[in-house]
Image (cartoon, rainbow over all chains, first blue to last red; front, top):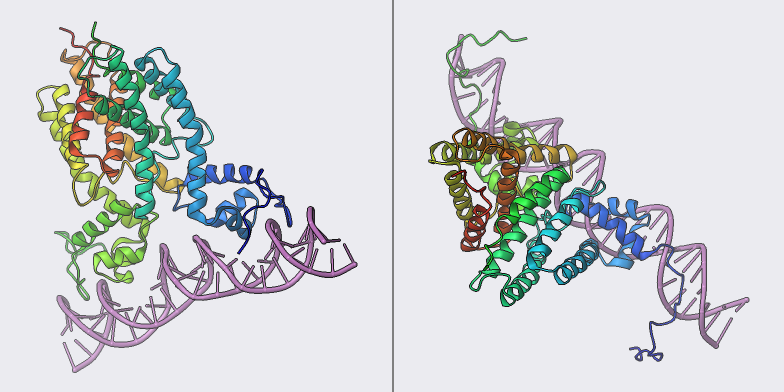
Length: 206
Length: 206
DNA sequence: TCCTTTCTATAACGATCACTACAGAACGGC
DNA sequence: GCCGTTCTGTAGTGATCGTTATAGAAAGGA
């Protein structure tokens, strides 16, 4: 039994031997390994080598392999989420927002170091983790649908537009592009695919 | 040194103890396990259990785990390839062919037993195997492009149509649908995505 | 200076991995 | 019946898996 923190201000004062590595840097490196190789194909040995630490440090800082993977995934998604939300809010129209997102994706998915999307092309045998991945992959749909609903209210999209289906479609295109990027497609090729996908945008009301 | 087969008619006469299992049935079961779990997450133990045989029989009949996987993948692709080629040849127009393929995919990708596409969503850490998968995923593009080129020649598609980009686009949509199917999307949802993708079909010449 | 706390590195843990040595069983040919 | 061949099941191989016990090092508090 411990008394609740006597100092309510912030974190407890540091006690004991300080950790010799930067948690965030280590997480970043773990993320890259998981990104390249996937969850199953990445061993704890791979991780400790890339992170520059020993197993006990990894387990003390991140719990176990699965929690480390989830932390890496969360780190990966965080930046993307912010970009998506910002683009959806700042673009003048929903159409421009989607086009901007797909064109940006064409660039990001074909970056040199870690190609493709860490989340979209992730596969794993464990059912629980697999359904977690499925939920995360489905999450952006709700954000897109909300923006499309707004576009309907504002008259950009025709009344009666199936905004859920439209969100499904552009999510699907992005995930397909993720596979393409992982498989070595060029940025140019993904840009062409993004432009093709924009031809499916519903006919305007005007 | 062995003399070339003295009986040139068919396979050499059966000698030794006959194998106690049906090779094709065993391969079918291995395929389903690989399909559900992926290459890395599937152990030889999983395979022998599903195939109803012991490890030595597996290795004698299929070489090793990787060759068994490739054989299972080939078996998987064979049926699909035939369907695609047939649909591309028999449909009245390229547009109808693509629409038919995507709608059929919406059904197949949401089948009860093994959801998704064994090839599209496959991921593995080994680089050589990964690039083999990438090649296989790219193969259908050439078939689509050939059909689109024919459509241009026949006047269905405008001259100057980027048929390669069009093939890339519909391949990408299919692969996105494969992820959606694996993640539990409904057939209805994939049908809606397929219909949305058809809105991207180039404007006719007429 | 000594104690408590928390990290570190070494060196393992049992379990499982892909794979195989071995001996016996089941066939055709003689 | 016997032989050569090829399959079968048992029981392992060494390697690697994810994880942890342990002991010592490095910090703050007294």
